Image (cartoon, rainbow, N blue to C red; front, side, top):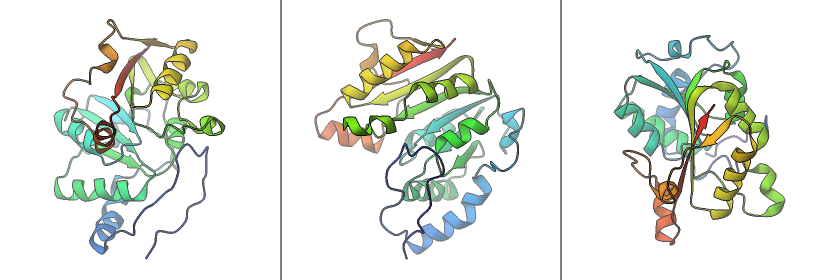
Length: 232
């Protein structure tokens, strides 16, 4: 049984929505657990995002396009004092993460399985302590560049929801997308690149667990870049 086709409701920064049909157990766990973890965007966002989580948390971070969920789960387990909003529109990736959370529950994760801009527009101003965007689709053809997630419009969304001093972190193995991101953040008035030395952008983040997409890039001879920008 294939997943039903869902109409795009926002700006189409991602490609296909699903891959192979989910196994029956995957589907059963996904259908049972995802509604409990999924954000309800039909209701107003709480003024204090910490109330979204079953765990008591001090800060709230967001990861856009978490893929296999390796980094999201790693960070949530490493930082139980932080709440994490994970966004991933790809059905198979979301199912993988939900099964992982079924087997090893974490009370500081909430999820959204559609376009991240929906969550960004729903969140209150200055409500996030950090945003992570790792190995997003680079849309390498020039005619598709408008579908890259990094744009002045989306940086404006980031600036609205990030607290002053919050951090936006971006990783990619595609040089043109790294340069694109540096240029867009340089042109935006609310972000400062935090690199201090020439080697900084090739140094992975603290306790970086890697991702399966990064491993694929390394196998194919590409090196990742890790950028950090401070919200003024």
